[in-house]
Length: 481
Image (tube, rainbow, N blue to C red; front, top):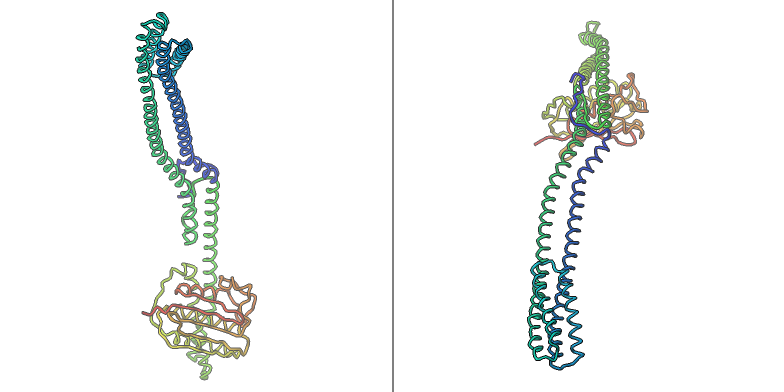
């Protein structure tokens, strides 16, 4: 990227929490709007239903009253004429006025033009009958014929009642149609709002996940030591600031890696000079150029020469450790007998143990396994060297190798003070030296146990630290078919 920060056209809020709040509001807003619209539609439908039912009930009640009044009016007219009773005639007149008032009420309530027209005709007919009766008088012979015409009024009023009752059915049908339309509208809104909310959620999920994924990738690159790739985060200001801090950490790790590599190169170079002198001196002694050697002196010279070769390999390993990750080194699995490797290591430890009177107690079982021979040699050599270093003079170093199911258990113990409780969490950290000082001419570097643990983990095993005296137990898979 050459240090140039490319900006994307996406405009982020300054804060991650503001972006989260905006996404929540925009995702909920369509649903809230749909809910409010539905509430208004349902309330409108409810009001319409209430009003329609109320008006229909009033119309039906008024037309029923008109029909009942017409029936009573017919009966009162005929009885008043037949019986010639003034009280019955007065009742007829009251019913007439009531019929007129009820007709006016029906006319005011009825929404149907045809019903109002028929009602007007019915009212005119009734008025003509009443006028005729009033003109001829109740005692006239024509009054009875005129009163029979009230049957037309009664039939007309009943017809109006039936037609008004049909209004309720019409209103119910209208309400059902309105309910179906409202339901269809609600479904349509639902199908429209759900995709909108879905796309809003997906969009803001992308906006939220994008910078988080960039941060996660940056952390993964740091963990996997891919330090050449710049960490860039695009998003809210606080997340971009976090990305800049991660990139600062990457640059710091690059600087530390360079310092470590430089340190390893310098240390390795400084070690090679005395190592060369040691190798040359041991070779001259082994070839007896400086004079003949006794048999015991020849054994000591061979041990010195072997240790100088081991030291050379350790320096080379130290360089490799600085150049590449240890876990990336190839593992060469091969069939072997761990007891044989243990005996070769024990022979190399004869001189330092004899100098301090330390005895080696071997309890080694013979069994085959498939593992990396060089890594296993380094594991056992480091553990035994560590046990010898921390053993008291005249102490005993115990080594136990046994098969335990599908794994091999390697246990190394000494009679030293062991690992202090406050050192147990850091004993395998590189360059960490515990509070207990070991014996020996060479001061501990603090990387032996770190290298040992790396080899154990690379072989798929684990290493445990015992309590009390010095005790380390390594479990490695047999890898046998």
